[in-house]
Length: 222
Image 1 (cartoon, rainbow, N blue to C red):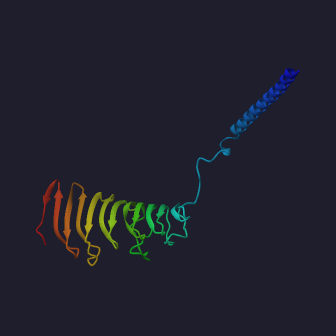
Image 2 (cartoon, rainbow, N blue to C red):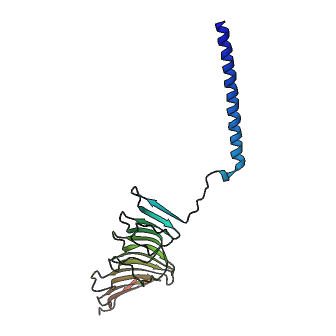
Image 3 (spheres, rainbow, N blue to C red):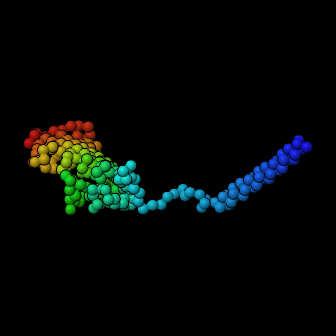
């Protein structure tokens, strides 16, 4: 009798387990069919639309901001300018790197009120530890490409390509702040030749070498 009871119990458990498996299978088929019929709208979107994005560090301080324009954040030192770009900040909130559209630069800790760029530009801008613009690489709306590094108050080294006159120029400026924004040396390639010029601190050409069709000519020093 004990064996018969155990067999009956096993048969009942087997039937319950069988029905449970059937129910689970039917549920999985129903859910799969439902998702398939619902289509992509029930899934995560492939494209995310936002006006801005802020990446915080472990202390809750904004370290990367991006947008069109990038959003203003409380811990950024500057609150006067924004552009279509991605901006990296340091722990103190200074601008350190901009990728995208340029904006009014900070120079020696201040943002000039009437500063004017020669054209809108898109590229990479490098800032020093206090947020001053110190160089970068960009393409300007006037058809000019530039790679430059700056002294604290002005240009220092520059390389330019100009689409309008199809030329390429390298320049090196005097380092003495008292001299001002004056080139020491300029070298330009244009057409089938080029020019090398040395300037005095007043900005007057002192020595010039002209290259035409591979031939070098140099007038007397002045």
